[in-house]
Image 1: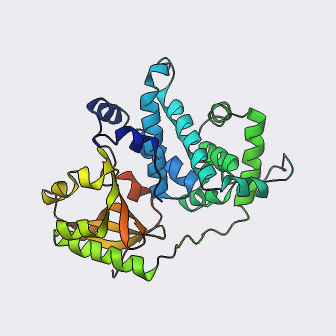
Image 2 (image 1 turned 180 degrees about the horizontal axis):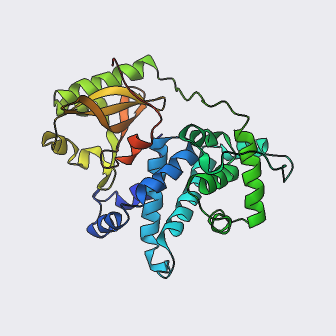
Length: 306
């Protein structure tokens, strides 16, 4: 999913992130895997979750002057991330459908719930809940926030949070433990992606450029957002730190390009690239090579032909 974001629009002039913003990213490195995990579960995708988290972090950076440094940074960042997730769900027109499905009594009888014993499989099932229930279950049962903290984060009351928790937990107990997330990719798109991978592995940069539109967008977490034509993207892959090659694959059912590290254990997926295709051209590249937590949060990673 290619979205014109605030971050892109602010950086279009040069594409490169300013040093002050990069320094801010470094100060919150320890918080970003948890933020990503929350956004990934709210959006239902580890890739969409990373995109939303990047936007949230940039918004926080722009609002630093308004932050009360006598308060904890983590809840403040989570609230911004939560609001970005809700905005994302609105854009995807999921919120209206989810809220319609949530119509029912405001309270439910106490039941046996996963609580803090919630496992990774159930954690991924929360995508089936309406946004408020999804957020409350995640924040309480996965991230262990208090009811008061959750009420502040989701702009509700403690009573509203309790009701949402009861509804959400009750629904989770009725869901199957696995939910299919496979997305279909057309044959023409698969052929284009395989050609991209083949040319990239041969370092045929002119050939790769031929596959992209003239105004194709590039986004590399933590360093660049702008036009592919204005970026030093291919130069960076000419001087790799570790041996690598690319392969087509799937992450949580979505077709992507995987970067495989060639080490003593063989070829191992260590990063992912999402390509946006329109017609017969690549119109967007999002490279998550600097976001190691993305693949770590994925439920399934498969390499084509493996």
